Image (cartoon, rainbow, N blue to C red; front, side, top):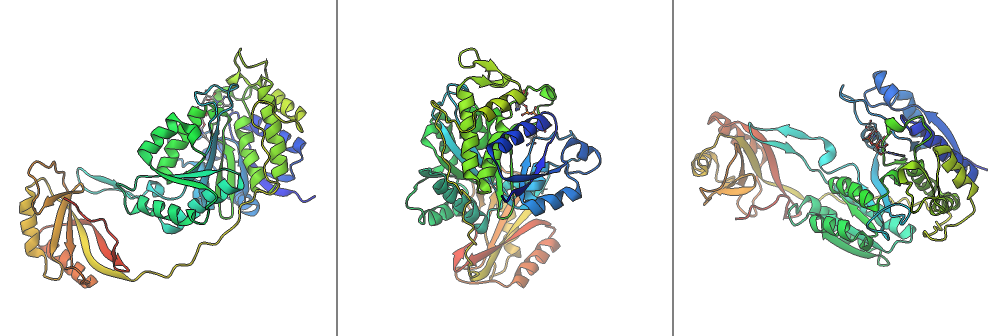
Length: 479
Ligand code: NAD
């Protein structure tokens, strides 16, 4: 029988115990895997590897392309980088998939029928780390959203929903405010959604969507969202499911994937045979689905559900009303192993497709748009002053081909015809825009900057304004 090579890291704290327990269950269930062990975490950080992983470990990861990882301890301070962020970036893990399921009455929750999956975009948005201080008063963080990034994550969410027999995909965005970035995510959701008429589809503005998710999570099934909203709401969803200590997550890329528990290394519980291995086991079940071993995944999951409903619980979920016996990590694994082949009677049994691998689809090629330079936003650091005065000075430095169109302060129009009441900071966005239908030459932008500089202004940043196939590639200023 062919065994799929996987890379395994035992991690820190409770990591080694829960990894051993999980691998024993997989082995007993007949998982065809060949684990290769790498070292990551605290000891590696302390040897001076800033991301907690040694160069030779990458070799295993790039070869097996499948990573089952126990939680690690990230040392405080010292310029250490998050191993998870490094792995996601290096291996192109664009999708974070987190099932948030209630296991009532065995795990306490206010939402006993909740069963949803958050699919979070993992590479883009405000997480690129491109931040600047621009003036005394203003700091910025760039939010980057790409069409390929949106297409990949949205298609993944639809393919996943279809493959897992789910009925609905919801999209959370804030495109009433961020019309270009979140607007693109929403547009791609609608475009790709047309190819999945068998799935119900809906879009929520993230604020009301989040409120609904927290109030009536049972109304949701698969929810796809950009990175920041997904980061926050996947924690909210796991928390209200009641199963933070029992949830796993998958990080999926085009070539590689990483599977783990969502909790940390719980150092205070380490080495005492106390920890609940369920979160990591849930990650491992997702791994089995990813490598096409759906039958083994179903066997493990059903035996695990059966163990829970028989009241065999680790200390963290033990309660007098629903638990029969308090078990240690090893004994809990033994109980699951003893129930392989059985199905739960109260909790919902699973029957995953034998081969749950998702289709690999290349992104469509798109011809580049016709791009025309039509103006520039020049950002100036100026101490507070009447906007009319700034406008008058800048007007004299503009040219007929590139007149001053508008000045805003934190996005609010302050020239022409601004209100004296508008609160201003020391950061002004001054838009110079060619008359309608005309293009400008890049040299005109440079000449403008030179004139500004000679007049005593220092542009702290410029953003070129383009049309793409005649459509403005910049947000209009209202007011
Ligand atoms: P934690 O998740 O380790 O622990 C929070 C609480 O939950 C503790 O009371 C702990 O005892 C309990 N708990 C967690 N998992 C449990 C389990 N499987 N069984 C029983 N009880 C469990 O969070 P923390 O204490 O904030 O972080 C500890 C360390 O873990 C830190 O160094 C942090 O950086 C790291 N961490 C790592 C990961 C990861 O590797 N993916 C994720 C989160 C935190």
